[in-house]
Image (cartoon, rainbow, N blue to C red; front, side, top):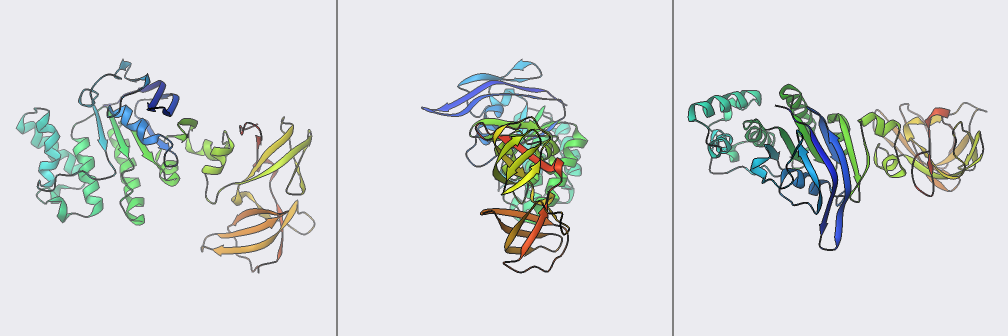
Length: 350
């Protein structure tokens, strides 16, 4: 079962503090949406409002065109998976999955069929008679998802569900959750502070900043065309280099003590963004600028450099291995189409 979800002029205040500032968004049938942002940006508050666990101050939430803003959580046909597994420790896996069906008043025979189908989908069949304490972290998270799936809701909500898992298991569960969502063809909203989770799992990413939506777009659009300095600095690892610059005329930007070709329409003072992975070691005589090596980090597949360029700390990430020592001068170049230019006053992309 799929559903559209529309957020209109949504505001939320706690006393005099406004934490959501007039949000608007349309989520389509079967989309996987990641809500990404720093701690305190309002992403979990937004998810709780969608679930009906928090009231709105103003604005509305519509599911399939029906305003559900004043409806109770149980009437919204939404299932939520939390960061904590929230399993009943005295119940078996079977009983945990069955519990919401029992509350819904579903016939026992029908419940048994749905439990078996859900357990098979999540590879939990061998564990149905075990208690949560006898399961691994990943298995417990599957049980929590099973308890949501078995209800066959219109919308799935995930509130940082992988935070309690180790790094290897998080990678595995990312893939499992995404594949499951695609098989079920259900609308899903997934809150995370981890940009790798958001970029690898979502159809679109809602990047939030201080209670506002900075950009709501497919993952590669956030990476390739960040709408603001905030998006540019948040998305990507290592983080984008952001330096002060000035558009001198129609085809030049002065930054980092060097002159860069520019084909844009901006003028005056700007912020120039350069991703570390787009910087190249220049051939002799072809360098646009150079930096003095401060430190290097070899991760096996990447060589990450920290340079001093005209007094600015500047990051470079290469997929080649070089023999460099601190203090070495490193000649650098950047392809013309890899510069990101933002208005310095507004922070918005030019």
